[in-house]
Length: 223
Image 1 (cartoon, rainbow, N blue to C red):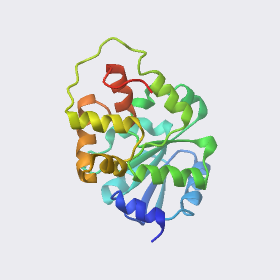
Image 2 (cartoon, one colour; image 1 turned 90 degrees about the vertical axis):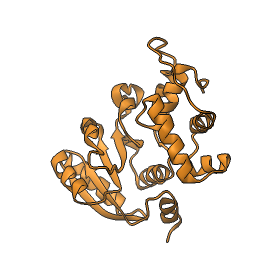
Image 3 (spheres, rainbow, N blue to C red; image 1 turned 90 degrees about the horizontal axis):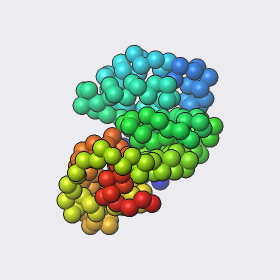
Image 4 (cartoon, rainbow, N blue to C red; image 1 turned 180 degrees about the vertical axis):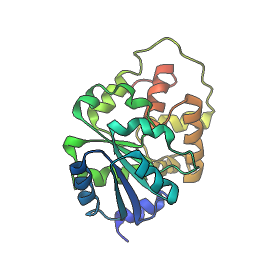
């Protein structure tokens, strides 16, 4: 087993992993499939031009990762209806990274610029997602964090336990579940419960928006 396969396995995503590529652009789908098949821990790769095909695969069996373009982002609201939710990696363009708009509210586990797509960047994004991180372009991260204090009104009180506050602070540092578990000296399963509780209380679909929301509420300081 490769080092990457071991890291995926520790994150509960033991290879070979099955991937769905959801994109209307046939050239992009083929390019992604070629790149994916060069990576370790990659098993089946399914190419879907529309949501209907992807949904059939999701219902038929375990799919570990869904890779899609921002054009299909609205479909993500339908994920998890059957109790299983794959990791989601969204491909975005440079203008979207500079002006993310509704991207921050989507239940996405990672973002990757289409202009930077390569075996190395895709490998790194999947590896980090498996470890509980949310990979994203630096420009997108700056935009999301910069908006944290842009809307001072309509704030609601949020009550976090001491342990949840510790977890949130470590999330803000970009630590993975495994790293948080080491810091807090608890199991990764315990970390997953804490992270889930933090996301629920902050009304956030993912770790990045949880940090942004916490900054907006003044729970943690801006980075």
